[in-house]
Image (cartoon, rainbow, N blue to C red; front, side, top):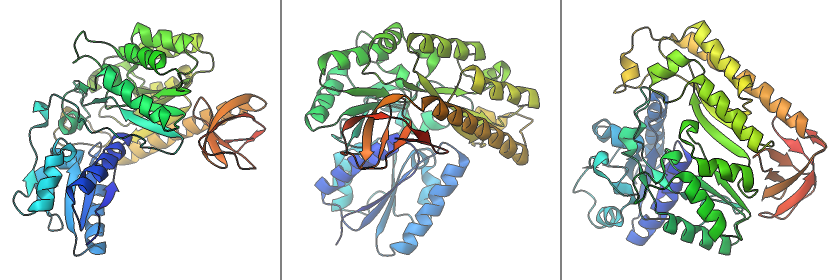
Length: 416
C-alpha cells in the first residue's frame, strides 16, 4: 500500500490546503488514494479538472479517486457521476480530520460528502507551518467571500467570509520565524474583509500592524490580492511607515470601465482605482502593483475595453493577471444578453497581456543600476521587495536576504 497522491489545481489557497490534507491523510492512515483538489474559477478550470481526473485514473487504475475543492463543492453530483471518481468531498469536509479518518476506515459509505458551505462559520483550524519555499511561507488568515460579483462562482465554493483570529495568526508567524523563514505572505479569498466577523471587527491594517509589532524578528511581510476599495487607514499607515511590509500589492480591479464595473457588481469605479494607486505610490514611491483584469465581459464594447487598456498605464500596473471571460452557469453574468464572441475575447486578452509585457519591460529597465534586498528562493534566483525576479551568475545562500546591484535584464527578470 502507498501514501496518497495529490493533484492541485487553481489558486495559492488550494495549494495551501493541499499541504494541510497531506498532514490530515497521513494522520488518518489513508492509503492507495489519489486526491484531486479542484478549482471552479472559470468553466475552463472545471473542464481541466475533469481532464486531470481522467488522466489520473489511467495512471492509477487501482487507486481510489477522491475529488474535492471548489468545483467539487459547486458541482458535486456531476463529479460523482464520473466513472473515474469514487468519492466527492466538500471544501469544509476536506479540512476535517474526521473526514479522512472515515475514508481510511470504511471507504464506501458516502460517495458524496458535501455540506452547505454557507453554513460554515469558522475557518479551518489546521494551520501549516512552512508551506511555500524554504524562504517564504504562506499563512491563510481568511476564507470565503461575502460579495457577489456577477461573474464569480467562488463564494458558492468557499462560503461566506470568515477570519482567523489575530492571536492565532501571530503565534503561527512566530513559529515560522523561529524555523528560519525570512518572509511571510498573508493569504485569503477576500483578504481585505479580514476581521469583519471577529469581535470588535478589526481590519486588515490592524492585523498587519499587530504582526509587525509582535514579531519584530520577521524581516519581510507581504499581503496577497486585495480589494483596494476596502483598504483601511491602518493599512495605508503601514504602507507609509513600515519598511518590513513589502511594496507590492496585487489589486482585484477586474475592469477599467465604470459601466462594466457596475454590471460586474464591483464596489469601485475606475477613478477609485486610480486614486488608490496614486495615494499608495505617494506614500511608498517604490510601490509596484499587480492586478486581475477580465477581458470580454458580456456587453463589453471596444470603447469599454479601451478603458481597461488605459487603466494599465493610469494605475501604472506592472504584473497583470489577464482572464478571458468564461461563462459560468449559476452566475448572473451568464444570463446577460450580448455575450462577447470567443474570438474577440481572445484578441482583447492578448492585447492586455501585451500591455502588461510592456509595463514589465519598463519596470525592469528602471531597476538597472539600483541596489535591492533580494530574498533567495534558489541558489541563483531571488526576488526583490517588489517581487521582481532576479537571476544571479553565482550561487547565493538559499533562504537568505542578500544585497544585490542590478546590472541587466531579460524579458521577465533582472540580472545581478
